[in-house]
Amino acid sequence: MGLPLRKPSPRFEADSVGDIRAFLQDFSLEVTRPKLADLEAIRDSAGAGVRVYVSAIPTRPSAELIEQSAMTRKVGLEPIPHIAVRNYTSRDELSGLIARLASDAGVKHVLVISGDRGDSAGPFTSSLEIIESGILQQHGITHVSVAGHPDGHPVVSDEVMHRALLTKIEAAEQSGLTADIVTQFGFDAGGITRWVMKMRDLGVEVPVRIGLAGPTNLTTLLRYAQRCGVKASIGGITKHAGLVKNLFGVSAPDAIVRKLAEENASGVLGNVAAHYFSFGGVAATSKWAAHAAQGRIVLEGDGFSVEP
Image 1: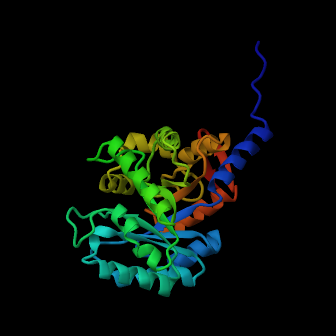
Image 2 (image 1 turned 90 degrees about the vertical axis):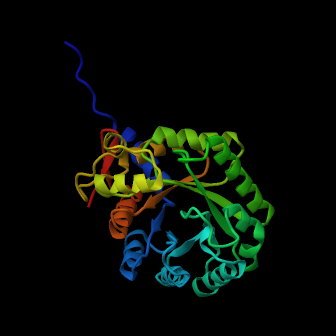
Image 3 (image 1 turned 30 degrees about the vertical axis):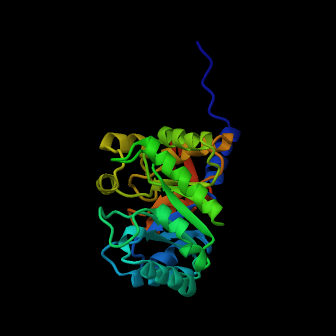
């Protein structure tokens, strides 16, 4: 008769919870057309000073992005607006937008992307052009985020994407801006880890904010994954995302977070943090993220559940 199996020691569980808390301490959130109540929910659950990335929508006027960024600042959060460069008809229009973001919302940090539209409304076609233009520095912007794609790009090869990312970071640093990378969300912790380590191998030492889909239902996740060009399937999502059983009862990134937290604890990923996309709602995402960062979790299988 064999010896009875021992339960995992409390110390081992405490280490895992500690790894998760450490990885999630400086999390950020991505929001689209937030209302005042959404922003107050972030502040109330996660505290003041949280970085909030405000999406730019091609069909909405720039004034709305300024308004939302100013509202974010007013409630005590740090607004980081998206600047989708293909949306702007002229250098003057883009310069005016950055000036207003700086004056009305105290913005010093922006995320620069090319934008979803196939054609350009004006002279700018790539985020690199804006970084090199001097417009950001002219209006007091000191930090720029650029996009990373661990799942690859649906059209552009990995090699070209890596080269472009390196060029943008180098251009930012040469023009006096500090830089970091914000990645698209994904469902494969192993693939994300390999991508970050590839960046480190290429000499990219800037911080990386790893995109994670906040708690929501599977249908919504699949819809956003298809829209954003993220490799996903129902089987893949359920395998990698896990299920929150107590607080929300929907798909959540606990298994991915736990694996990334373990890798982060080993030191191989460098400076990384979590970046949540609030597909299931801003309040639900911020509450889940804040509770997990506080260690209000129960380890289960490969992931964990968040306690109320």
